[in-house]
Length: 204
Image (cartoon, rainbow, N blue to C red; front, side, top):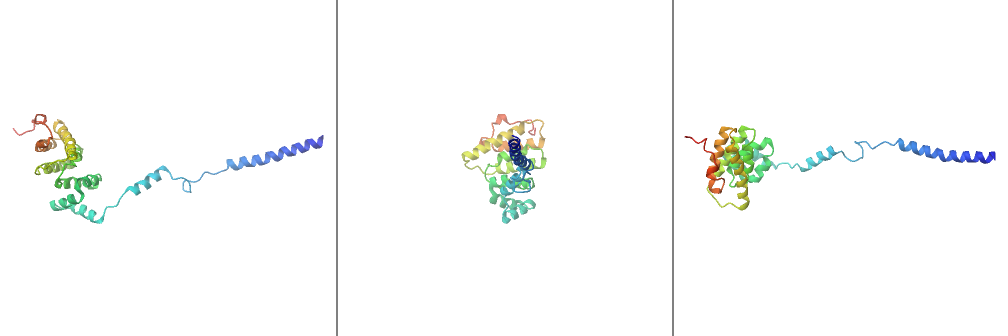
């Protein structure tokens, strides 16, 4: 009887020891380090994605932008021919190139960038706003050509913003005056109705 009891106790002890060792091994496991072979963090993934999306500018284009930034009408016109309205707007998203893009848009031959220029005209920066309005006036002064449907939609969107600026009594006076001038120059393109354009700033 005593021998059988000893055998049972020994058997139970043999079962409990491996289980205890297993629990010790599991609780002592170390999670992979962030700098090790684990999954990358969200911020690391975002940074990698940004680096992948960023496309370096062609050296010839970079030279055109540099010349246009410090140059005159010819340099701006060459940049406009190279980039077109869409390219200038895209590059103009960079604050360092925005003023150059705004000035170069005076030399394009469409109204694709009109909404973007009108948005800048409503912005906080007076220098950029007035430059954008000047570019709108320059494009509007070009001889009338057939406007495709997509360009017509851009004219509508841009003119809505210009009219909002023209009517804003608390807006900068100089901006309002140029906005009204631009609207009137584009009346034949359906920019606005004559009765909708403010007249209180007209020279009496």
